Image 1 (cartoon, rainbow, N blue to C red):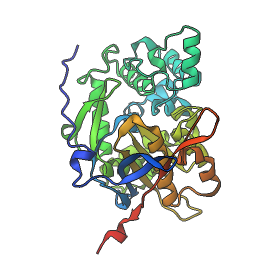
Image 2: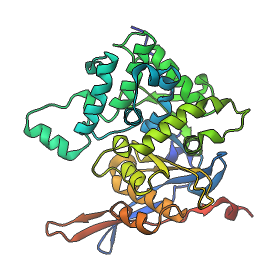
Image 3: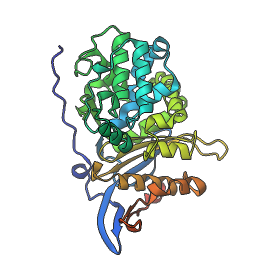
Length: 375
């Protein structure tokens, strides 16, 4: 077994790294009482990574968590995994996902394991919090079935790493170890996406047992802008070799939004279905989300991307939902029917036992174009 590498600590996070308190982005209101406030940071960048709009600190350092999944999948694609294992777009999408652990997701992954000759018992992501889908969890409990690792929201990414180990004839049972060739290859891909080197990566351990990475929020947005327009890089840019695999991953996610999240109450899935072919959304733990916005030639809108971080993290999905929808509305990306379709995420409500609204989360911030901040 390879030696365990001690992860380098993630540097100062949003609260410690910001010179002043993050702005309030949403308020949870019960009657006339402001019961809670949610602070955070938002940055939108264009295809070159230049900041377009901002609220809060675009340099706040965040842990990528599951936002990294579309990018780690590049390692398998560059190794020839699509051809070797005959991977479909739906299977690529689930490998870039934080899926809900529904039967749809289990069947998709089991088909991959069968073709690859890999046992799903090798998944090292654990079972904590699995499945995310409440109805599936109720059904499993009713039937006396304990969820296995395949229902964990990170099992798609772990499946991709197992396939990479199989393809390269590396050991399978310890693919998750930090010094295993799979993890070395993954770090190398992440470093390329973020225009750095593996040695300079700031790492920590994610909840599913593999590395996560610390980056300024602006850099996260820039990575998602690359996902939005992977072919827009100049020919001399060393990241140009990422264009083809990122295009495949992006298009697979666009075509299979329910593999990226789930069939019920998953914002990423709902966003992609409300604006089909227009954006890729990928949430991470602790209130982080990246949104890649494709160019709209009919409207003359170029590609861009958002990165959003809610400072109180994973305690309240209501804030992460509300703030993401409002940011897209303020940027002119959501409106009309698409905004109405996402209303339950925009202003999430809590109902009393009689079905009446008892509390509501209300987004409340300005998303300032950077040109207006100059002078």
